[in-house]
Amino acid sequence: MIGNRATPPILEGAVTGLWALLAAVVAAAVIGLALRYRDGRFRRKGDQPVDEAANGPLAAELAALGLAAGERATLLQFSSAFCAPCRATRVVLADVARVVPGVAHVEVDAEAHLELVRRLGIRRTPTVLVLDGAAREISRASGAPPSRAAVIAALGPAAASPDGQQ
Image (cartoon, rainbow, N blue to C red; front, side):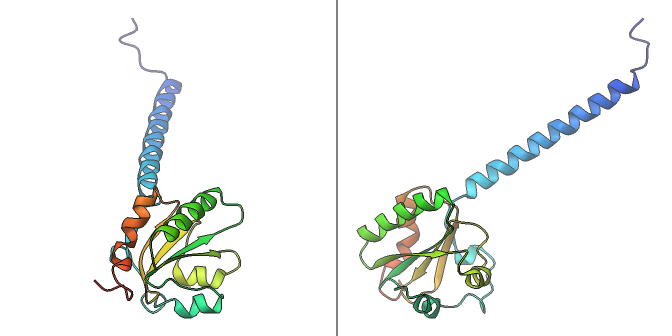
């Protein structure tokens, strides 16, 4: 009778392995969906841990790189040479800077400026920092922004007045 026989040990190991595989697939799917949700979303400075001493106004760094900040806001993009999403981000940010008065788009090669990348906590490319008129970071997005509207919405507080104040 099959009902009274014990399950062979090899089947018990296979079933345990299948449960482990299923758990790994579910965990990977959940993590992947969470990362996809966060990808390219702008997070306000208060929503993320920031070392205030290392993340003050960036006007001096931009000037040292020979880059001009925007009058009202700056879209500071960190890119790398072989980054496909960086090219798409460049197009979106340049378009927004062209349409919104007083906003500049500045692109920095992350590989060529590793000290600045480390100081600002840039972990991947593209990363976009939204700076106010005084070159203070007000929000950032890691990954390509989902749309022009998302970039314009992130600019809202900075583009309100020349000094970034409401």
